[in-house]
Image (cartoon, helix red, strand yellow):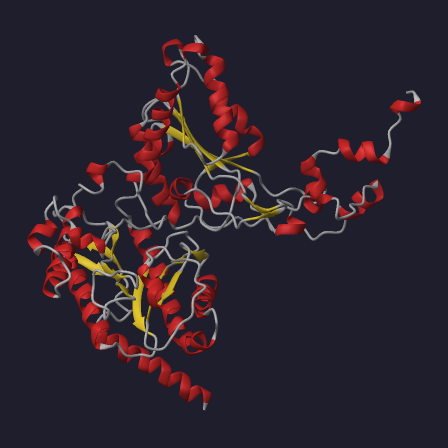
Length: 530
């Protein structure tokens, strides 16, 4: 090497990959002596295998239901990868809902894990199905490896113990394999079925590396890569995503129990909100006080929030997706809180209550609240097996349009407003009245329209009923007494053979019940303070 080619500290630094530079803040020992020392004198890990989880049999039935639909095809369902929040810090990991549903894995987070259903001869798969299921993931690294102490994303020294392959097999009733074997499992024999290849379907946009791996395999095995129909392949994958979404339209008994757990924790969170209101009134960002009170309960009793909490006081309650929660909370106003706890199983509740900050509704607030409650009750009445899902929304809209006409706010009759050519009432109720609920707050969202909006209400469904009225301060088309009032009442409904069961009924719904509930909490707080 001549003088001009000699390495300098500056040139060495420039050659260091960007992804490695985030570790420049720390100095990692590299000596063999240190490595040997770190690998020594650790207590042996437990060799006791866990019992089979209650969810395992349910997850197996779900996998069989998918297997029936895609006979002879390889199905690839990723959990997803860690997502960077900022520089070298990640968001809390949450697996894709389809992956969670088919494996039964909740907060036992497994970033980069992949479930593969490998086609078999008919009836020779798991439990007589058409596929054999294998969970690929990165198991616990031995304490004699550098990963144990040096890998801040997956090393036990940094993030705690990880399960072994054997532990997951025992708990989930699933065959398992090391993630190093994943590439071969995804790509082997991929090709056109006419020449003996295997067709692959992938849940896309969950793991970019898997998207690229499958795309490359398809391209490399195509008879004529230049004629590869990418839109047809996308449709192939979309059908799998659609099927996994539709599979969740009917909840099994284990899922129903998880929803009850999520709702119970959410009810406890709303009680914390009422306790926090006196402090919220004194704080310049009182909505954040309310948000924080609920979040604390969500983390204590569950895994997380099911979605960003809406804590909207005053006119902010008329903003449908107000999640900034930076506003004040004032006596005399209403506060609308839309919040849900996600259980450790990843099933989430979704509940809304609109309460008077000082514990009592004004005459106009009560009038608007009662109209929304009546609309909700009308929706409950038609939420029965055999009716169409869209009937729930229609029933609520009929009540709200009639009240808006009665109050002189509609420019036309309620009948005209409710017609397809009218819809004037939607100025003050622009959203849908119901959506399915479960692993996602808007569950089953990729289901076909004829099974969702035009679907038939069926025993085992869980969905919300959530009418509302929103009168903005800046709305000059209404009387001043209505402006700044936003009301939504949302409950989580389980459909049974006998009709709807309100899973969130422990939270007061009528104006009198709400006021009594708040008075009881305020009174208890005052007594405790004295």
